[in-house]
Length: 301
Ligand SMILES: [Fe+2]
Image (cartoon, rainbow, N blue to C red; front, side, top):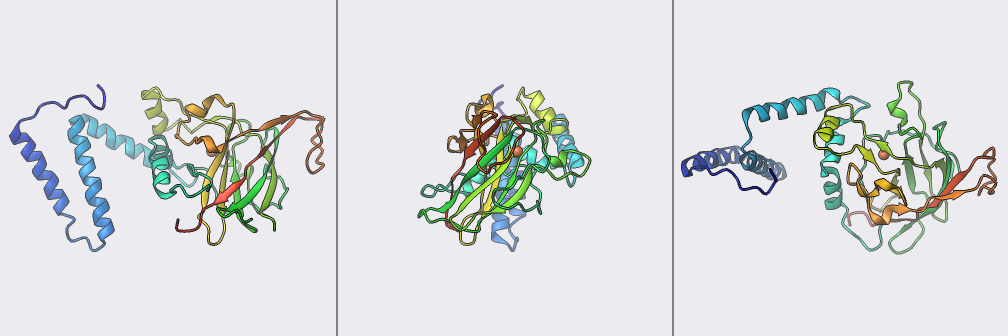
């Protein structure tokens, strides 16, 4: 059955009973003091009932849905956020981001926040290493932060976080490590630079109910290789985004619909004997480098 299949025919009396229930539920919100809350609740109820009626949901399927959401709640804790994974894999996160980050001049595009950001990541100086012991090929990342008038933004706070070469974020290990995440500030010219590890593809956690949903629908849990950024500066719109690796096979099938062409960057492989930008000795190993010039929209745009 496809989403646009003809609904099963129902009698006029049946339709009337169902309509009457929808109207009663909508009316129950009439005394909501907060007009925005009333709007959201009424719309959510309307769409929920439309969905139930559209697919003619069986009572057994309704129970399966309740069990699924219960499981999403049970596996969620301080470190595992299954509700964000659910939102991400249904495209709801990207849709919310699209609504709230309207295109503005040449401002850098936003993408999903994801479940692995941690407050209070360590500070590194511009040019420092955010890997903090995360395994992987060393990667030099540099760029500028500017506003949409092209003015450099000094002192922008740049949070970066990423998985290691095995595809795991630090918080997915049980040893309490902090690795592959840090924050730094752009310099007086709006420039920034740091060492990280070259991003590699990884599956979103798929040992829980969201993974079961992906398996049941023959969808892959894999995310295209990426490096997360969150950039904040006074008077400018906070940017939450990633950069992706040009040439990655997964760019067209990212499990959370996060890829945008403008965020796909060249990560250029460097031979083992290539001099590093800051003279760092990498012990004869290859490394990569990329550039990401960030443009922030005005706050409130
Ligand atoms: Fe990620």
